[in-house]
Image 1 (cartoon, rainbow, N blue to C red):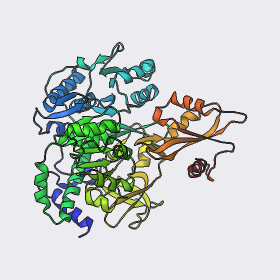
Image 2 (cartoon, rainbow, N blue to C red; image 1 turned 90 degrees about the vertical axis):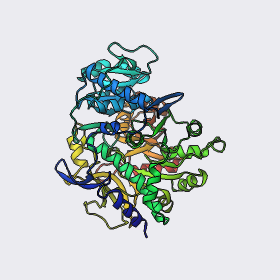
Image 3 (spheres, helix red, strand yellow; image 1 turned 135 degrees about the vertical axis):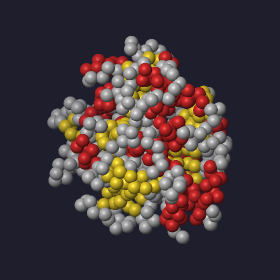
Length: 575
């Protein structure tokens, strides 16, 4: 039997009648889709349905440990305090801007319990960028840490001028907080489930993505979007494991019982929680299935290996550089990694050779890969186990609740194996770009297909491979950097006549940000000074690491568009 036959056989069972993941036709905003007929209508129902004992550990951060029982109490306290003390109403945006602390997760679930919208802001943003996120989203309540609080202090008048009367709830306050702000510990409401009315098409989450516009776009997800992504995650994970059992000639139904009886999943959370990978693809499914989350403040391979050994971590997901860092660490050989079962990657393409490296060097673990975007609420395809070893260059296959096709420049579907733009469709696709109807209409066509901008192929088994990115985005260590956003800053320098931002290869990060500049007549420029200029308006990971000064105007096509492919080639020749 082929790979697709085993996968379809498992999906027939997982998506069949009577299954929790039974599928059928549903209507979403006037479109007919295949959806999960038994899925809850609210994200908060996933939290309330967690079957873990109150005494089971849920969150681990440094030397702190929080049980599910303690988390349940605190989530209700915060949710009711948001409603009763801060006036948050159903559908109101509530921002999150803090590092990977337990408070991020507790705050996110509390926002859902209150029927509000969790606005996940990049914790690496500086004060200017956070101000944009607050005024764009209208988040009058922000859950922040001390660093984000301090970064916002100089911008409070600007935020008020933008129409937002901001209240900051400061977690882990280590210093003074501004007048009108509250310490996290001061939010203590009733430990009762708030009575709110939330429908499946109401907003649940908004995340910000860097794209081809000068400013990040707010990607709006409905309750149904987020719940569907969770179900897709579970079905893909189970589907890969059970299809592998079937391919090896064993009974997948018997294996399903063993999986359900397995010990608690322990996930190391090294990716930022504000990414859909961290929140929707790691935090949410591990929580909903009663697992434990081990949080890292920042990435450090040695620390990760220490935590894997100490906490007996079973699952890991990060950008590929993180896995490569651990395998290359001088501590790798001396640390016990035998509890690891899955080494997942996402956020950037996985080097095919890494699949064998994981499978060979981590005795009980198998490599896994996912492809997704902020606009699909998390994941679109997944690959793992023996299928990944057979197709190491592929991002995997899609669940049945999720269609995909590859089209040419005229929008016509191309034959199997040919290149074209990847289009996705399903109830996991985002609702809209916040306050940007033109951008929304350009991204989602009238039939509900989302145009990803990624160039891809789909093989005879239905496995997806991403060939190139049509979107003008640099992916630096898993962080998306919108070229137009950086260009908008660089272009403000008085010496710069024109500029273009692009990615250059980097062994560990995948790409680094580079900029080509053509100066105004008679102007001179110092590279370090230009980088300092950029750093005043951009987060550090967005500041160009390479500056190429061109004496002539930048190369362009007949339409006047800068030919970044030529710039990349010239940069490679100079390096």
